Amino acid sequence: MPDLLGWLSYGSFFLVFASSFAIIALGLNLQWGFTGLFNVGVAGFVALGAYTSALLTTPETADRIGGFGWPVALGWLAAMGISGLAGLLVGAVALRLRHDYLAITTFGIAVTIQLVANNATALTGGPFGVQFIPKPMQAWLGTGLAWNLAYLALSLLLLGVAYLALEKLVRSPWGRVLRAIREDEDAAASLGKRAFLFRLQSFVIGSMLMGLGGAVYAHFVGYIAPEDFLPILTFQLWAMLIVGGSGNNRGAILGAFVVWIFWAGAGAMLRGWIPAAEQARAAALQVVLIGVLIALMLVLRPRGLLGEEIAVSRHVGDGEPPR
Image (tube, rainbow, N blue to C red; front, top):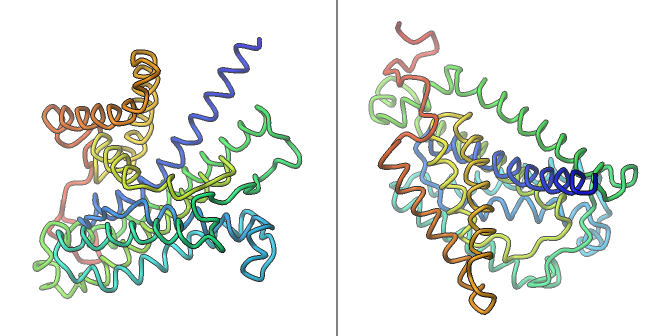
């Protein structure tokens, strides 16, 4: 029985992480898979969501900004709002640039956010991070297996709501316009579609989901620091989308779980094989193994495990696509 409880506890812990990554991957899939926006600053938007919710809901940090400890649900809404606002501000400028310049801009924004979190000690705690982040339902369930399972159910519920909402969006005329812009922006514009406005909407919604994923992560672990949001996080999330299949929301979710399983399994394997004195190299080898996995996927299944389901239509009107 103790072994079973231990496996259940670890499994729920593992799946909560995968669920939060899946929410973020859905946001990235909306931006890249459906709209063709090359965002390599994902970690920055995740950090904004995590820090926003943590600072507003933790009484000790809320005092620093003249507030009080917000309920966690309001903290999550604020995380989505601040991340979406950041996406609006960044997108209003960066989306007018070409794809490579967009990538450079978003990467720079992410690095800037991480540096601010690391140096604004009075607000964010600097390298010491934010501690004692409140955990929802903990007052009733404690900190054991029951709470882990309840939080897992909550994170899966949020993932399900995000998935269903995005499916509704991308299968609507709005989603068809996004795919048309992705394939041929000039053709879409010639039919009266304001490509920039649609791309900006997609970027903002995707950023909001990234912020939500960061907030879910923060309230589960109870502690965040700038080192949690390094560029390697962006690499992991892109790997999840590539492996799962961009342009497919189910693929984004599947890729998040598959790559996280692969990442955790590779880490455990390397720690078992590499001598204790060389453990510092294990993290680097994990990245190498993920790179090998991506290369294999691009060769064997270029579209990922689940490729895009909906064929791209040249019709970008408000009616049904031609049959």
